[in-house]
Image (cartoon, rainbow, N blue to C red; front, side):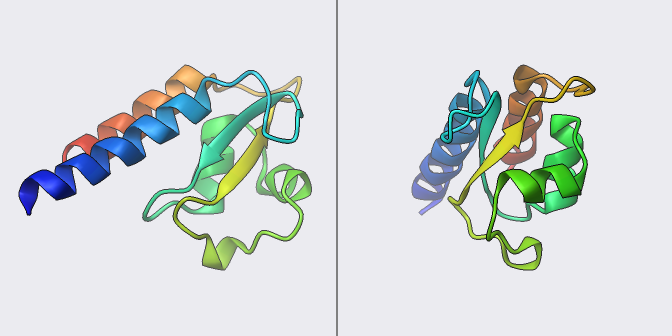
Length: 100
């Protein structure tokens, strides 16, 4: 059972990392696609992307921050004042999910 859980966590971390290196969202908006994992909240996703929660909501009509679903794909748009890069986001996801 441990190895199956490890494989699932590895897949989730890999998916988050691969989505975070995109130069555009699924919607072709400049930025990257974030794949929701357990315990993700809009505030953290927006902060990692260097944007406000309002900008995250504007880029993802219909999302409900209080009920994000694992595997849900969110556009984190790039703005002129974004401070985070996709590689920083990918690293933080890998670190938070590799420890178990």
